[in-house]
Length: 314
Image (cartoon, rainbow, N blue to C red):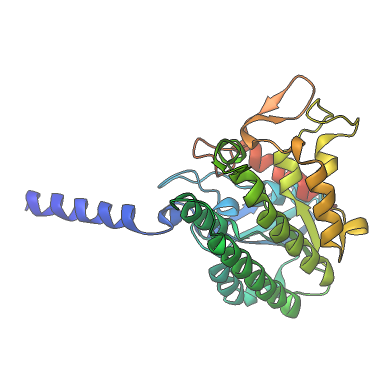
C-alpha cells in the first residue's frame, strides 16, 4: 500500500511538472475582501481582475503573492472608505486567447464590477521568445509575428466583451506589459542585431495596440513598461535631461492612433530601456521588481503596478 501511494505521488508530481501553466495550482481565481485601514467603511465596491500569472500573483508552484490587483483594491478601499470585493479571475500560464475566453465566461462579474483591470499577452511572447531563441539562426521571425497577431486580435476580443457588458460607471484599466529579461536579450546577438532590438519592435506594437484599443473603447491604459523598464530619474544612458521613464511612457494625447510616432519616439530613446531587476527609483536607489525567474513581479513590483493604476485616479 505504501509503495502504491508513493507511486501515485510521483506520477501526480510528474503531471504537474509536465503541464503547461503549472503555476495554475498556485495562482488562479481568488476572492478577497479589502477594508479601509481603520477597519470601517461607508460604501462597497467590486474590483474584477482578469489576466494571467501576473495579476494572479504567481511566485512558484503552490505559492501566491498578493498581486497588484489586491494592492489596487486596498487603495480603492482606503481612498473611498469602501469595503472592496476583489474578484481575481486570472489564471497562470494562459495565453491571450484563453484570457479572452475567460473574460467571456465572467460576464456576470463584469456587469457588477465598479473597477475592472486586465492584462495579457505575456505568455504569448514568452513562448514565442523561447522558440525564437531555439532557432539554429535567428532569421525567422514568424513565431514573433504570430504572437503579435494572436495577442492583439484576442486583446480586442476581451476588450469588446468588457465594453459590451460593463456598467456605465465602471472604470476599466488595461495594462501595457513590462518587458522581462531585457538584460538577457541584450546579451544575445543575431548578426549585427541583439535579440533585444528584434523583440522590442514586436513588444512596442503589442503594447501600443493594447492601449490604443483600450482608448477607443473609453478605457484607460496603465504603462507597466515605463514603470518597470526605465528609471524614474534622468540618467546618463542618453544625452538629454528628461526623466528616462517619461521618454518611453505612452500618452493618449500624443500617441493615440499614431503608432509610427510612438515607435519613433521610443526607438530614439531605447538606450534608457533597462532590466526591471535593477529599476532605478531615485538617483541613489534601485529596486528589484522581478522575482528570480526574471519574469514575475516581486511584492515591490506589484506595489509599483498598483500605484500606476491608482495614479490614474479612483
